[in-house]
Length: 213
Image 1: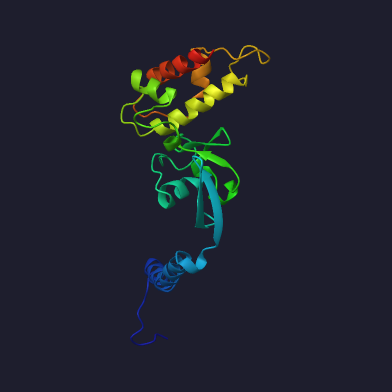
Image 2: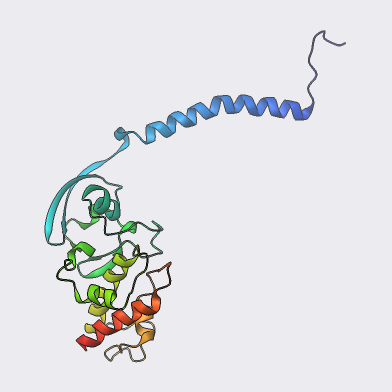
């Protein structure tokens, strides 16, 4: 027995109608959840004191704030660049207690008692750090975007070699590392230059490292 005025739906039409009904319910809820996650009430704020380039800075930060964002967005030290934001390009390299790190991969609140050095802490336009002067002399940059991270890494390389820290290509792990092209390239391999100025960068690092030998 047929029911009058009954609309006959095909299987495809039924699925389309059902999907549309579910979307009408779920999408507004997802949008509401997304909005609430981005509101300040969802933040956990912490007071942190960071020592950067010899100066202490008292900040109130979301505990999820990376050191990179604290430097750039809160302290306006924009020399440290945000590249891939995944720790693979090296543009955000800074020195923490003399060791280089990718500032995009660490939280600011983790460095309460550390000594942080950014590119702004190396020399001035009138009194360049030897590594900065070498980069200028050898044209170790083109667009300049990665240069701050490159120089921070290069300074760390200088300290590593002077301290006798070997690398994966060091021939003798017990001897002082040789300042060869292979050594420099290996130690600088975590910093990517999209312009391809690698040979000039290596020459700049070699000159400074060689002058300290």
